[in-house]
Image 1 (cartoon, rainbow, N blue to C red):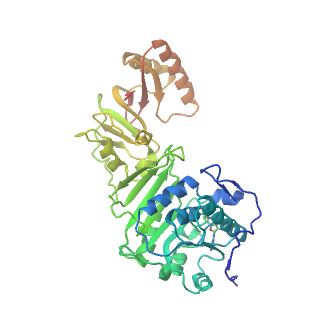
Image 2 (spheres, rainbow, N blue to C red):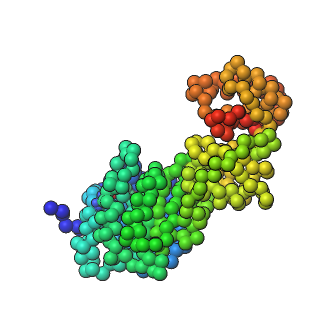
Image 3 (cartoon, protein in one colour):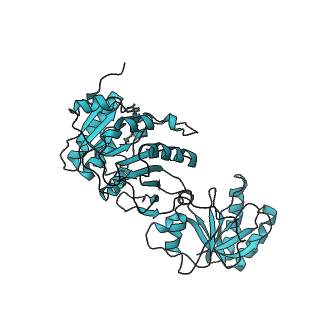
Length: 417
Ligand SMILES: C[S@@+](CC[C@H](N)C(=O)[O-])C[C@H]1O[C@@H](n2cnc3c(N)ncnc32)[C@H](O)[C@@H]1O
């Protein structure tokens, strides 16, 4: 039989306090090894809280039915100045969350009116009774537990289950004209099929609710976070949002939006890259979020257009006529490389043909050439070293790279723009 839910005491947890991950070093919280693995870095907690501060949320408390050590819900409570109802099935972690909520609120100089419940996040009836049926929910924030080694990212792996937790709390969620405010923190590796399954679960309960999918990345082409923002929490202008998280917690993130739901596959009418064109290798996380086309409109020169050469894999490539122009300090982090094509080389990239690459580079004034192609991992450093030695002697002042737009194409020698 399920244990009745009960309030976690913020003074019960006796473990030591450590600096909050990715946050101010003076802010100390409680985390054990498991909670540290599960928790959301403070920088991300605060970026989300700031985005929600711009939304018109309904009245009521923030509900987190699987709160872990409570860092995200604490960030939301303090930024939005709202009451909290957080639930965690693991008693020790629930006590940790209660202590963290109190610590974080005190550190930020705010009153803590929140409650952390030890119990099952789907047990809404008993939990609401603890508050004499008076709790109304402003924002439903859900970050379920998932098996760490999952390859399928099936929705049935979430704990608690998404459909069960939604059904349990649906009638307690306050609504605005845009519906309830919901944020679902999902696996960053959720496939398009799984994303549409999540959308179906939502549509069954709130037909036509506004949706914004949000990808967040710290760079290197990796998607670190994927979340779905719904109803009063969604951005009505943007069905997709991409956030480039800055390396420093003191810098502002780059937030890009796109109104397009799907991006069509634009590779079909590809024309081969030509000498004189600019080739740009984009950040693969930006491309998989589907935001690249709308971001490119902001960084391409007026009148310029781009052509997809390759849209999948680690090195998505476009070609265009003029150099890109960047305004935001993080814009340049959304490309891996950009350069003007100076030569098309038909020789294979092998030691015995390397002289072709060296000669063409010297002709173009290149003194340092980077390999940006998939090569046998043993051969890659050998070829790179040989190129470095040959070109260092040439005294060329320019830098460049060598790449291939698609598997069947020639190699392209480019000078960095
Ligand atoms: C990914 S963690 C949440 C992390 C949290 N958002 C943070 O920022 O620290 C998910 C939590 O859900 C808890 N959980 C799993 N099943 C649950 C259930 N049925 N009811 C309540 N909590 C549950 C797990 O114990 C785990 O601590």
